[in-house]
Length: 195
Image (tube, rainbow, N blue to C red; front, side, top):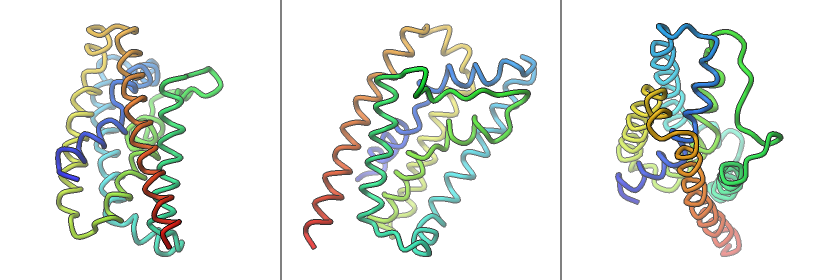
């Protein structure tokens, strides 16, 4: 996987366009003059979490005795579930969380930006080829920059694309993520049954 393909994968998994309505909803209690500062703070926290997991996640998995095969399969399952919720959202399975007051870490940084699928994806990349960590770090940074640009201007993006445009893009990203999730599951199962 190249730097660009890994960055695009991380971008799709982080789903910034799908998160625009969630960000706007969570920021309603915050004064408009302060909203961009809150978004910037939460995006930096999300980047710290992503980089932390990129470098230390493998050690956590080693302590828990989780194999790369199990990580591929579980990452595929998590990604598949999130993609299904993107394509077929219901009130019962919505990713939206109720927030009282100013959000701090939850839910803007985690799980909206640095969610379980993003963390599982980067752990999967590192577990496959740990020596290529500079490429994976570059991919995370590129995906985060693109995500940050969209979410920092969430109000303008929402106004420009409209609710239907955001929904259409989220469904498209969901369909692409289902394909990636199925590939992850196929790789994991083929590796498990090859032993």
